[in-house]
Image (cartoon, rainbow, N blue to C red; front, side):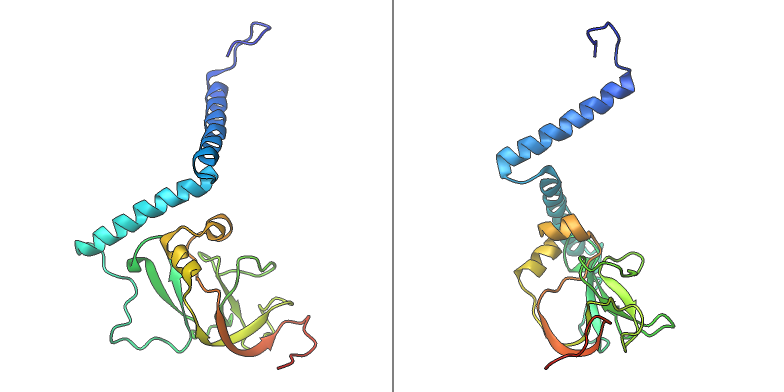
Length: 194
């Protein structure tokens, strides 16, 4: 770029300006064409690629499904961890019963603040079963008796659920709907009414 005073912008700065301009134009173009921001469109395209690649690799026998419950007795408490968008080969069964000196694993929503998440997961934390350690003050620990898989959970697996893309990332434990028994409560709860 040549400025009015005769100075020239260095090449590296020009490159940064071009990249910023291209990103702004990509966002504007995506909004105009799809009604979505570039980040969302980029993740949707990556999800399509990951899904096709995943299904193709499984079909060709190159990759095996990471989660197979055929003839396997799952632990009494488990969660499905989705490693990345794709097919069933991107699932991992996480044993929530595994007790350590740090407590047991529990799933937690991305919007819960002030928790120590398990490294490599935005959806798992360690808590004591009595809620004395690791359980946020405004949360409940629920032993899940039943759950459902709804359309939002499926779109998370496909990599197309926008809030999961924006706020959580992968790996992720899906799940919006469940029923169970409250077994511990955070310190902000005075009592639990059934």
